[in-house]
Length: 197
Image (tube, rainbow, N blue to C red):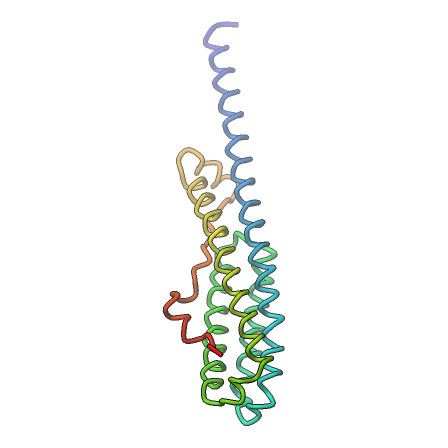
């Protein structure tokens, strides 16, 4: 065998090892995203479980505000369905974007509920409502921290699959960019949603 033949074989081996390494890195980064979403999912499930309890506790005070209560439950169900879709495909940008939109609707409907609570002193003074509101706020804070880890994982993955020459492997094996879970609102915008009791 000639030296050119050996150089060709060495170059081909290096290329194969590099391609396998690039592919494995992209798979690992996708798995990191799935794990990070798993942390968010635990908190979202807790949040979705708290909301019906909050609505049920508010019903005795807000019987004539049925539309608001139903809107909260409908928004919660929509957000839960969107979360389920992301759980099955945590790197799918469309599912993540749908979850962000559903969470925005849920936040607005909860904001309306909490605004009503401000108008009803007996509701505002109810210990069950106060405890559920505090648990909801605590859960939302945990979601915020978990969201940051998820967004960091997405950032690393998107960078890895978008850089040359790894982008070639990404295109061959259909690794596409993922979407970040943007905060639905800024911290200042979320403040009015909290009931201070």
